Length: 436
Ligand code: S3P
Image 1 (tube, rainbow, N blue to C red):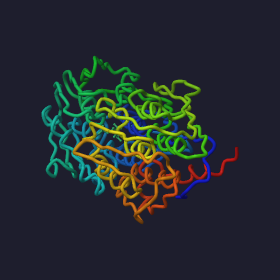
Image 2: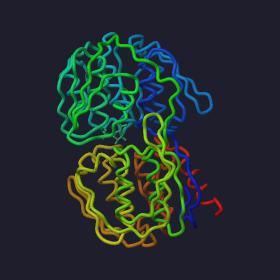
Image 3: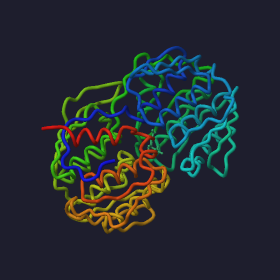
């Protein structure tokens, strides 16, 4: 990945949204019949969901940009012969947990890489056990063996706002008997609700309470038909922040989801004084989409409150980098969930900013960043940054290198970014080479 770009110009079309791609594959596989998914996310995480579904008896083939899914329907899924390897993907594991727990004729083991093996699964297995699921784990962590059962409805009061947990419980509830209510403390991303409703499933929302009427384990969903996945706002955030922070930039990110549960980062960057223009609004697959143009900006510090964290949960590392270049001190609150992402991202952000010479303070769930005033003041004062198996930390470090004199070595960069955006380096090279 190149360092110290001279300038950033042009437009960028992103891989399909990762969250929607997982759900499109899963819902197409739960339905009986054929669906064609266009523009799925290209990263390894989405490939893991596809690979797990193939092991469960679903045919998935790729033809250029189109992913063809042919499924016997949920009731026709078969017990896989080998462990289902979810790789680095928490969404694959948590959503499949909810679904597989509700299949009375099926037994399966879910496992993942070293990062996923450290992540908490009891937040899903606990509520599932309460509705009749049988799941063995290693003290709440993978590997997890599910012996499918017929589940019953219940009221779930979630202690944390998590779309993965909400989605797992709604999907389990769809194939259970009786009514399921999922109450989340703050609204998390709502792609599952949008997509299920579009398929004709009865799902009600009142504030942050979601009610689904169970259809039993033999429920048959209609196929998705031709389904187009919008670009990923979580990837867009890297290009947009790069353009705002770079001294000579004018970048348009095309056609990505403007779902309000996902674009909290645009609100934050707007109040930091970022020059942003939203253009060409339209709708795709039940999601609002638009282009966003970002140009070089002098940012000012801001505060992020707990209430807005779910709408920007995956963008916090790159927003912390933006805060590091801003004039003034920024305070981020309500960050407890950052500790249980692909890495302990709060600790990783502090490590990265420290490598770049930026003063920070942090506690169990908060972060203070003392902005340097401009990106040219970011300088690597350590040789290497180790993102571990965390794609978003690797990409945040790469953007720091691109917009400043910093020349950090990012260990394991290519492998890490493969989870969500394998063409990250090539796409940014295009922005560096585009003429006015
Ligand atoms: C996701 C939800 C979020 C997010 C993750 C993807 C999803 O996790 O961080 O990258 O697709 O549902 P939580 O639901 O655990 O907050």
